[in-house]
Image (cartoon, rainbow, N blue to C red; front, side, top):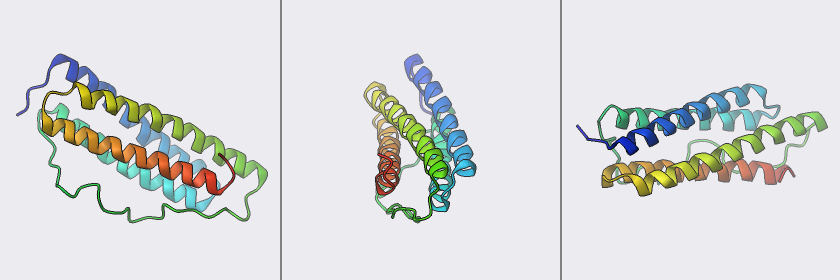
Length: 154
């Protein structure tokens, strides 16, 4: 059982709220996106965000999450390089740009929150877990940017 400081508990509460928001936003965006590859990307990121939420809940419950040495080093099992959508309508592109921009802003905020937590947590095992999640949040931002750049949205 790990012992958390009051500050760590407050930071975890914020992370839990942010991760739930990410799950909800990506899930909603996957149903609103017009392009199929973007729908798929959003669904896959929603699943990763659910894993982050589970990790945060594990820490809140007083347990250190198990982190394998190679975790986060493998490539995702879904498409993360994008080509321009050839049949984008103007309205569809505007819609998808809005969704991507909103989620990219969310990722920037969440990544910054994890950055603060990495510096504020006392236990190395917890800092390692939080740093791992932060790196994944940064990857999500990279994927969103890649999609937007390929489709003239950035």
